[in-house]
Length: 184
Image (cartoon, rainbow, N blue to C red; front, side, top):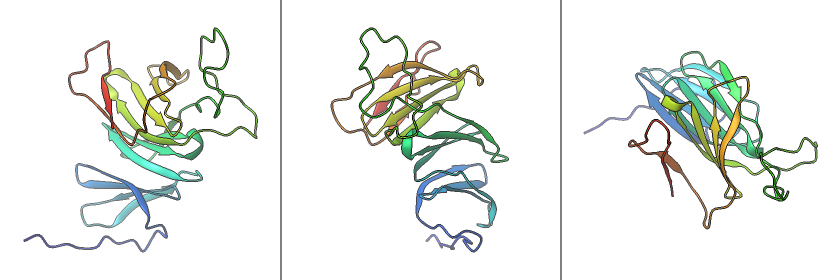
């Protein structure tokens, strides 16, 4: 029979976790209000930080990368060992503006302060190819090329999906050229 032991949450106020992932002896959690925490093998909070977002929806891990998907199209990457911020992906097109321009070659977000963005509801990373796949609440899927962290760009955009998407996963039989993924 397994025995449970509560984690020590005395250092953090948030207890509404939207994502939990494990790597080696650490457990990483993300609360809905944006508190990213690392619990060690003794169930103690080793590190934590506020990722400064309105609302978080999930957490995933790939190698040494923690990916946080959040409201308003925000996706942030952190290093697993230090929680150092690696980068924040550019925001997707504003709600209702994707694919509106005839002959549009690039997906470009608007820069107005009044602009509203779809929430990022799922994110995964194909670390071997430096690609991130993000799914948004407006059913848009973007594949990001992170090979140049200074110039992150959209590699592929699927601007509509015929049904709601709740999660995604990178398929293990992806080839060098293609990142295959599944949604549900």
